[in-house]
Image (cartoon, rainbow over all chains, first blue to last red; front, side, top):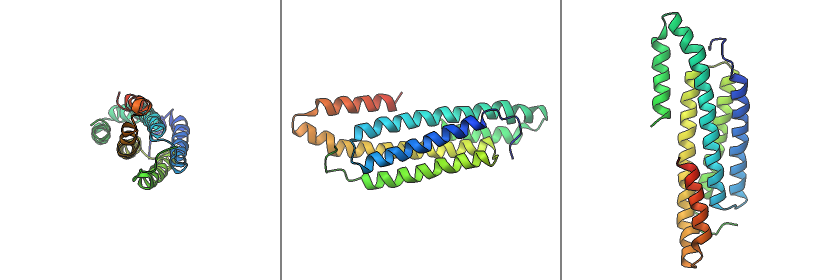
Length: 91
Length: 91
């Protein structure tokens, strides 16, 4: 389980709820036969919202888990997980 | 409205439905207090699924709308919209 000092979790969940609704609305735009160009512009907006939300998770992670783990001298696993996540995110 | 020669729309809608569910599940992971590292890995997976779905929309767009518009000598608006979408997607 995560540590207690995560200050952005509520904000992250609100943003994910908005992204979820945005994806659903693009799906419905496609079903309604809307133009590809319109769909692509919405996809770009979702991607940017997703990246900003991931940034917030990363901030929480650095301020919370990582600092705490380093203080306890227990950083090995946390840093390994973080590196994995960064590797997957930035290709 | 879009032209009739879009062959990927059903596939695009299925993928968007999956992405929607994936975003919802990350929101629930956050509510359940799961680790930031786990959340980040899922966010990277969603981003990659989103990019692949956008690629499919772009393929449909090129094969359908753009080719058709060029044949009709009517490409100006379609190309302008496409450029806007690409500008927003690749920063």
